[in-house]
Image (cartoon, rainbow, N blue to C red; front, side, top):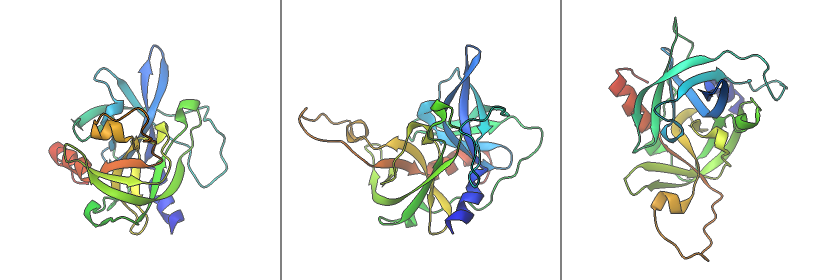
Length: 223
């Protein structure tokens, strides 16, 4: 079952990069949600002046080299952004529609604690390891942040390069969240704590996919 899901999503996960001083720097992961070239990712990785591109990652399913010597970059623009929810909708510059899986958006409200999830992303893109990697975890908690953003906490490790990738409910194979990174209680709650209080977290977190759907609605597309 997981192999079917991996085949469904691996082509849609892209390496998100920015051009800088004649070179290209890896930022994180973005994933396709619409055939007109729309992608979702995490907003905090983006800056207003970034010249962004996305690059297809090396696919799972085969033994592949760490790095791809030849890549095809696609320029992208920020179509919609919600800084408060940390979600951005990107638009690829395309001459024709691209293949995109349909019916991929799930129902976050019906994904409960104990549900197994999959994460998709390119965790080590910063090190020129251009491979999509898939991890399995379990939803540990569902929380509301101080600004009432719906968060999924899960126990799969998230490396910086996976940020922006999809969190998939492994029971129905649909996306329920956008990966934000390691869960750091101090940053999320904005609370001051005693220096000797142990607060190290081995959890990761994602925001609900519903915020990505809201951006798509503002853009006039359905996902």
